Length: 289
Ligand SMILES: C[S@@+](CC[C@H](N)C(=O)[O-])C[C@H]1O[C@@H](n2cnc3c(N)ncnc32)[C@H](O)[C@@H]1O
Image (cartoon, rainbow, N blue to C red):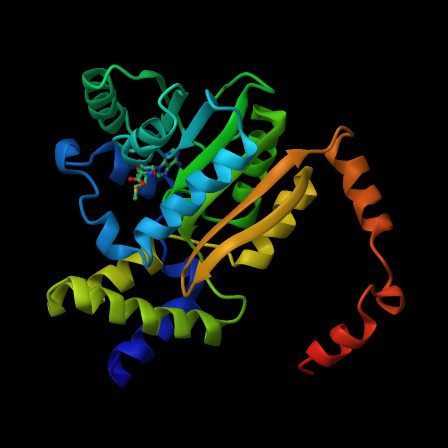
């Protein structure tokens, strides 16, 4: 990435929400998508380790969910991820949620063609009561490249609390998505790597608009924030399974039986004080400041 592009992207990053589309603009953009048939054809060119990360998601599911799982796909679009789930778990029942009825209609057309067991639900994932699903009903909630459209931390927290409510007690949530670094400098390193990947896969004049558009349309959190919100709403354990630059596969596994607030306190109380660290020498050695 040359100096001009670097400083323009850094400037946009620093402006944060001031330059972002509003919630309604993002939603309307997806509702109005021009060509549902040809939606998101470049997914594999935009995201690093595309095959590996999907395979890791499905291998994780295979170890945690029953062979005929009920699966919820959030921000499913035209069902690209749902179809992969069905390929790997042919007996799964899939529920696809998306803001765009047009995309869901195309997803339904494609899923009917392959005789899949599915249903579609249209609604805004980030609005409190828009998407109504049964509590304790999914073995696994998956999502790819959609949740980065949350705009602010409270939208993510609300959605994560609803996901916790929708999964069965031993269920899991797996999200493959665009994330930011926990400091602007780290995010910029990610942007430099992303520019390299895009340059290998797209003509030169497409690279900059893709990078800049992500700063206008997406509001990804960093991984520490995602994991702490998932813990806060009452997932039993949380983890990042893979991360490369601005992309990650992370999730929450199982849910606590107590209400999230009670449990959150219990989890916090059970954590060792710094002086009681399980690995005192190691944690000292890892400190950077
Ligand atoms: C980049 S596409 C990814 C589609 C699909 N998950 C995939 O991997 O191919 C993002 C999807 O998120 C959906 N989306 C964006 N904001 C949403 C919202 N607030 N509620 C529900 N779906 C949303 C869009 O309509 C779109 O289908």
